[in-house]
Length: 407
Image 1 (cartoon, rainbow, N blue to C red):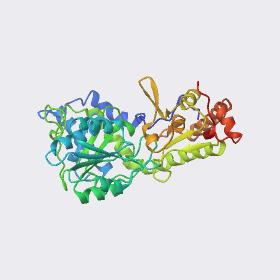
Image 2 (tube, rainbow, N blue to C red):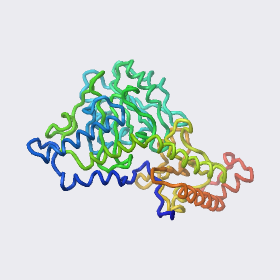
Image 3 (cartoon, rainbow, N blue to C red):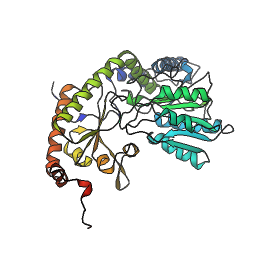
Image 4 (cartoon, rainbow, N blue to C red):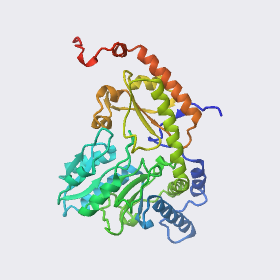
């Protein structure tokens, strides 16, 4: 089969909509266009029934016991905001302390910063060199004023899968709520809100081959019943937690994407793991001075985050512009800042700037993997040929001992 360019390998950023998802959504744009809150006619009932079925499917995907625990939102950023701010406001008489990690998504970290400005205390737990948080650190950080612990299921940059089940045992025993930003791991690694004692979980459709602009927040309804202060006021939709006319086509697409994962997720994870290892082993065989960032044992099957020493990540991305990947630097204002996730794992600036994240997904093929491997190997070798530092390193010079002349 001929390879189509550009090759898409940035599936942690977003995924293409699966054709089966699009097909399920289409009727709800025209013929079945009713408002799910319209209770007086067939158009509304049809929409309401579709939303109700969607809740059941998504609840099944994450192991929720009650479909009413699924609260639809515009996506994971809104779900994260609703979880943290909603809990903080509702339980403010009980405490003012939140625990999270330094490698969370910005939707969590920036929400925590906002809460700090409002007088809440936030503890940011460090991670080890693999990007993993130690459950013992969670236990030590809990005080009698702690309301919530928020730890992501899997990291969006380095793919490390956090020990949520162990953390859940601790939070449940201490009577503290546990939220997980489950966006990257859903359907790829085991996740069950009941078995893992998760009380709130954020999910989004566009990371699981569904449409953009729709997600949900799982909110536990019993043992314990979790209460939230709504962040948006209006018609009292979504059990009073999130007002606004529901995005019915989006919700139908979200549910279809979830249904596909329930049926095919395990087999797909095996396939992604095979493709990732095919790429990793080729790169490791042909190139020296590579570092794989993140845990190899506890990792998303389709994630490969690699630092190519003596190569500037941005230069490599330009050299492989036929491949959609992302770099370990984030363009913040005018300066290129190295990734805060890699920093937190102890990766130095030079290696962080040389890192590339390959996000392998459902529609990638072995042919694409082999093409990308060949391309990356060739370009890295070429860029290193132009690097005086690499030449010095190959000559056995200890670069840390070199006295560089000041400009």
